[in-house]
Image (cartoon, rainbow, N blue to C red; front, top):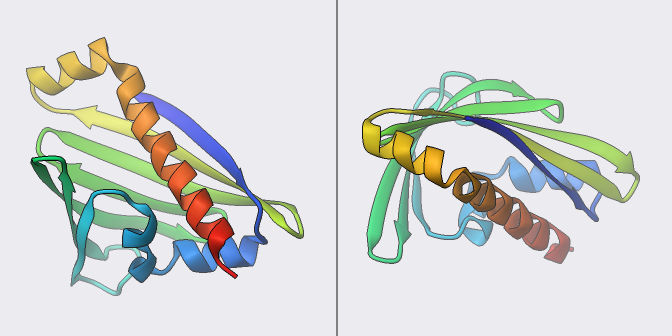
Length: 146
């Protein structure tokens, strides 16, 4: 399953990149994120691995991020592996004007196991809705920064 989401942020591209590229900011906009723990490699660089732990209601989820491409603002791609799913996410940023930036994410989900495949087949909108929720939260966070 593949899809793209995008949003316009009312901040200059350099500001948006700086906020996106700082892992200390993740908890400020990524709902449910409990921890972000660097595991190996040079942080933020290709080959780096980190563990993200989420709590969504009573459900806990852990995923491993592996950075695969770092060429900001054009591309920051990572692979996110969790139980039953691999999500490849390409983030890119486009300067619209001196004070406006377009943030684009391209997602490719690789689902393992019958249960995950059934969920994706029956409710593909759930995945895109969650991705858009994170984009909207990042926009709100970025625009609230001075």
